[in-house]
Amino acid sequence: DTGVSQNPRHKITKRGQNVTFRCDPISEHNRLYWYRQTLGQGPEFLTYFQNEAQLEKSRLLSDRFSAERPKGSFSTLEIQRTEQGDSAMYLCASSLVAQRETQYFGPGTRLLVL
Amino acid sequence: LAKTTQPISMDSYEGQEVNITCSHNNIATNDYITWYQQFPSQGPRFIIQGYKTKVTNEVASLFIPADRKSSTLSLPRVSLSDTAVYYCLVGDPNSGGYQKVTFGTGTKLQVIP
Image (cartoon, rainbow over the protein chains, first blue to last red):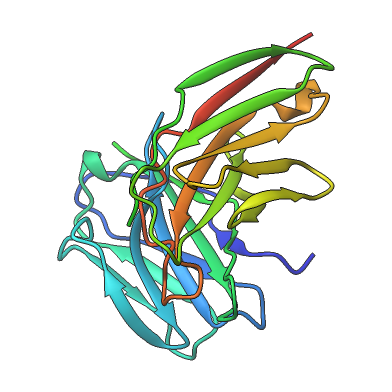
């Protein structure tokens, strides 16, 4: 299967700890997006990359959040000093810059901060 | 980006056709309408995209009237496996990162046996 993969699928951590999530996009896709989704809500945009460049960050992305895509392939999302309000599903999506771009989503990483 | 309004939830019996309408009064000239489906504990999945009139694929049909201020996703003969949340997005897919939007709450479709 060559879809978008995310690891880990689940993460439980204590408040104040740092966590890092990984996303592996579809290999030829040059755009990569991170979203956060809480229960009963749709995905909310956090940030996106085109190749290795981070082109936009949402105001939702506080200073405790950082994302990287060092070689324009996989990406990591780190949350420092986690808070209970960070508990959510973190979704990654990738797309190919082309006419009528379509995003392909991964299965997500579910984070629970105790 | 254009804001969309959808019903929060819908119920349907198996085998029936389901139509989910999305309102997008502020749609711009270059905007397309895209629908995604999401099952619990999975990421959203692209269903269909259109600009005007009617688009059909193996999964669904999308009807867009001439004024483009609304659109209707039509799912023929639904089955229990179509129980999911359906999101309507409006934006210009030819612009950089157009889907950096909030999906909204979507429409939760419950298919009843």
